Length: 454
Image (cartoon, rainbow, N blue to C red; front, side, top):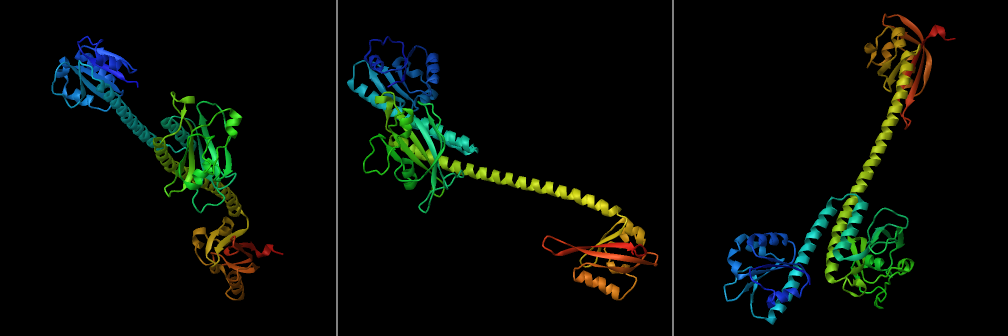
């Protein structure tokens, strides 16, 4: 076990049994003989597992603030003294200048406990940092990479892959799997291997029980395998050796964890390969229960973040679609308006007198030639019924009215009354204008001098 040793003393202790006991362990040894140096070394050791030995002659110098610091989980404090004295709360044990075999056992046990506590706290801190990182990342590819990296780091895995549930072969849109799912597929999307630099293409496969990933999806439970080449016969799934055969890599331990959404549906799988441990044979050990619990928690956080990221992407895609549709509509409208303006200018400057009415006969527009032909200004006729221009009341008026009522074309000679009260012998052509559904929206009326009509 490796830890830092800080000894605060004026005594010559090289031949002391306590000193020899500490030398049984690896790690840096620091001996100081002043309070100022001791304070600096404690500050340096604040995040490192350390055994602090304080000689009784300096015992009274320890301030309350320093005592609080030395009470933290990464410190084991020992007092080196010659006689019985009251032991402060932050002191783990006293070291008499007489050899005590029980001390070594207690120290070893305490070091293991402290190491485990520090490791757990470090894991929790790292887990919180991971969860925060997941919550702010919106890009799906970056998020998948973060899930992969964090899972490998916290579990000491040599390699990892992420698989996502999709609706079918060739589909890219992420989906989910539950007890009612049919024809769903699992898509391999990303992997990393610290020992082997290899690029694996994305691949989509049916979700089946005889694969480790497929079984993880179907049953929604973690699968922890100690040796991939010696899977229990009672299990239906088997390790696919194709990648090992193709690359020369040796898969031993496997941890396959489902990612579940807020409705407890599986949306993907995080699969870890080969937990690394330098002191183990081949440097590989099985994943333990703690790995399983931690990665299961990370997978849960990842699933929520991934679901949010997919929703964010869908919203952005929908927004982009709306932008394109609106942009196209604006361009079409602009083009239509340009054409309409051209037509309006043609009508406005046309030498033939023109009026436009709604289907009830109310005047909506007249051109310049109409104003010249009738003597009425545009504002004088706008909103009036077209019949006020009819000089003769009788059959012709009824014919024009019938034409409007029946929504059909009408043409013929027409006695138009000018502003001066004179009769303008005219030839009228009235044409209905229909919308896309075939309904009449307007009538366009053309007036010409009857004398010019043969």
